[in-house]
Length: 450
Image (cartoon, rainbow, N blue to C red; front, top):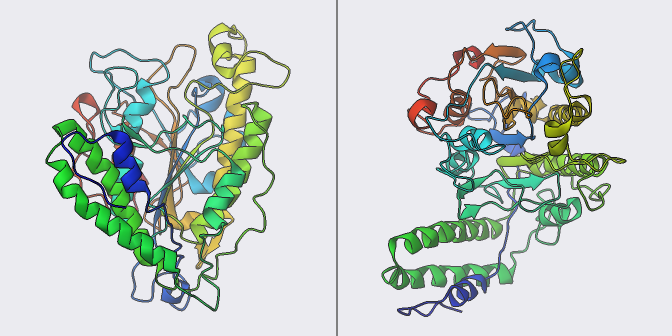
């Protein structure tokens, strides 16, 4: 069961020794018993637990029918934003924020989202110059839940993840609603409202095995080079998180009145990236995620609707969204590519569905969205030319009354990292700046703060 320390340890031997303890999980739901009498805060006066999430779609928007001409609370909802009218009071739109390349190449459908996720422009495709902000935030607030974070891909494609600690440690997404249901509410889920609880002997054994494995690593680390030690440290971080989950699983979870175990995983989508299939998959995953959050399975999450190269296709068409952005002519009267624009419309509709689902999930004296902050963005503004100016971004949720909503905020051509920096500060990350060179942000976006 333990690792044998050798001068030339193989990857296979290392992983085999580490993984024999198994991946064991624990449910720690929201503590309703800690609420005050009217459900607006914890009994001791602290605000309700805060959640952070990201939502991503690829290939930007159509500026001519998307971006409002007014700023503030009375901005107009243009045609491509119309689906968001019903959640208008819950969201903020951020425009006129830019990504600066500092002399590096604009790597199509890559530079933009990498800069918005980790604060720095990549030098090459595949390079990730820092960890994504959701990972930074999960390190600050993710402890005490069954999963430090959850990542889901509505595309159903395993490579579609925008959550990472490094290029060598990308968080793999859930790609199936059925499998996500089993992960959340399968045999290892502990019902927080069950009147009985019996600690699992297997859990106790696995915890003991993991403790022994971690002890054995001390000798191993002395035999490794710097890069291998870094990779090993990243891996052992996840092992330590596992041990924390095991510790929690040996305790009876408190009741959580808002936690209702779904009877089924909902309608599972078929295989493929047809928009009709992706829509069904995204909605099924969204509905399951809402209950996973209500049951306090995690405090940090990531949802991908479409990838940055947007491989989505429409029934009856052989051309993907991506190909259309390059090949379809711009309608001179409308100023858009009609068929490519159709895909953007579907993305905005699904963003509206996601926000509304959070707003309709009750918690305390309000909703799950009232106690959350969701950061949504794309990879560029107009995909045909891969523009990095005024990449549209959103937030949703008021984060326990700390965030103003219902606004269109003018970035005045400052670095788009200002929003990611503000999100981190709101979530309690102890940092005075975020990003590098022209993308460094040191000031919060005051217009959105209460």
